[in-house]
Length: 347
Ligand code: PMV
Image 1: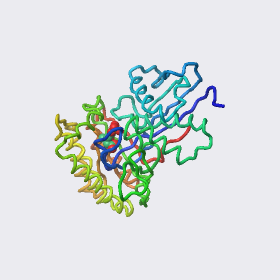
Image 2: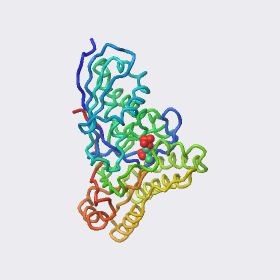
Image 3: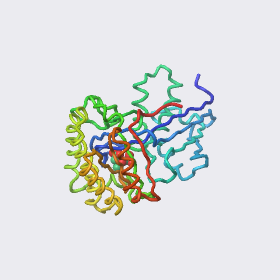
Image 4: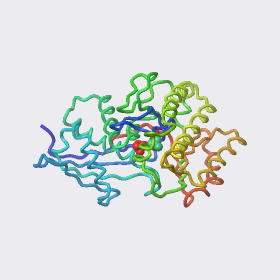
């Protein structure tokens, strides 16, 4: 009684880590726990059309990105399907047409692997649910996150909102290396609508893929201390998130960002992923915070772009600051205003 054909569509957001995941163990297990804000505006929408086929030996799929066939993404999807096939037995029974598009500008330098893998995993789980209608919501989301993790580690944090924790931690009940969970402790309301403006310093291809980056933590001289620090920072974050202590939040989040980059600068081979404008922006953020006392701070991904984080109540003033002082350091003056969101939705 499995459906002959159908279509499912999911929209999944990107996420930005506060405590970073950097370093992994097989298969796609994090070397340390991490936590992220789920974003809202930066998202991927994916539709999967499925139709029964005769052959049950091979995967069969076509891929369209923003309306056009996308051959160069196919190997990545093929590898992903091979990896998850044992968890979704129906995969070889259907032809799939995958249509995907991003809300953020084309090649803006924002990684779409987290939102993309989350959206695709949710679509596939949706089909799985049609075959097993009694599946409960909690299982559905946990398994979607589990599958997304096998596509791209941080993608497992893009299924739910607004704060998602991934990676086993003795002091966080139900935390798991296998999937992300909604942060289970009290969170002050200031963090439920926190703003993130992504300053697009450099839109080109990343200098180091995250796959290579994670590998650089093997045999890294500071790896063990760094992993321990991430565990400790998750402990420290609990009272900070609970009380809304922005001063402590800023210290922890900026330190995490710089530590991520410090790991890359001290690995072998070594990399500098910041650009001169990244540093100009960081200095201007520090100066602005010092003079105005407005609690803005930054975080970074494995690249040159800067995420500017601030409470919603400061939005107007901070937007002026961005327009007047930071935009000149962005490639073509480009930035994206985003905010903490509620997680993926079915469309
Ligand atoms: O999900 P991956 O394998 O692309 O790793 C991403 C890691 C960082 O974005 C640099 C940090 C994080 O926790 O998101």
